[in-house]
Length: 97
Ligand SMILES: [Zn+2]
Image (cartoon, rainbow, N blue to C red; front, side, top):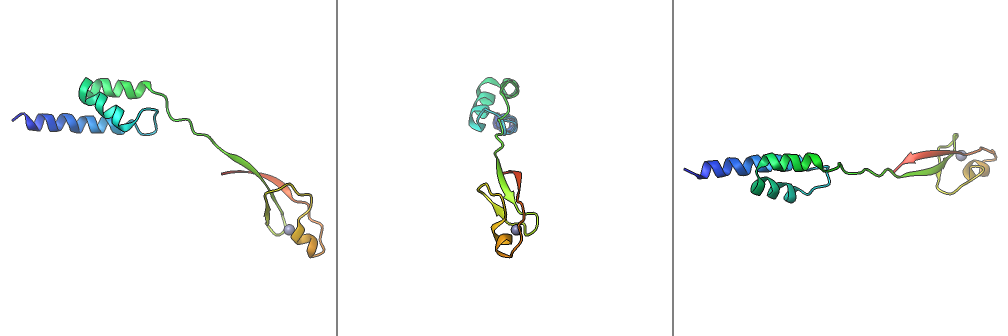
């Protein structure tokens, strides 16, 4: 008789804990907060934590506009095109890693 209530309670706690994804609180932490302090406290605890900080990494690549070869090191002219007898200036491009 008491089992469905407990299962519902744990089910609600799991659903509350799912909100913890992408936040600075672990799933287990949110889950146990919900179980022991009620799901209402759990959801408040989750909403009070900060969202994960996403660090974006940029890098500069030097791309030849003619042959599209990417160079990781700084270059003045494309060495492939230089071999083909053309002096093509590579242009620096910021790309997201
Ligand atoms: Zn080139």
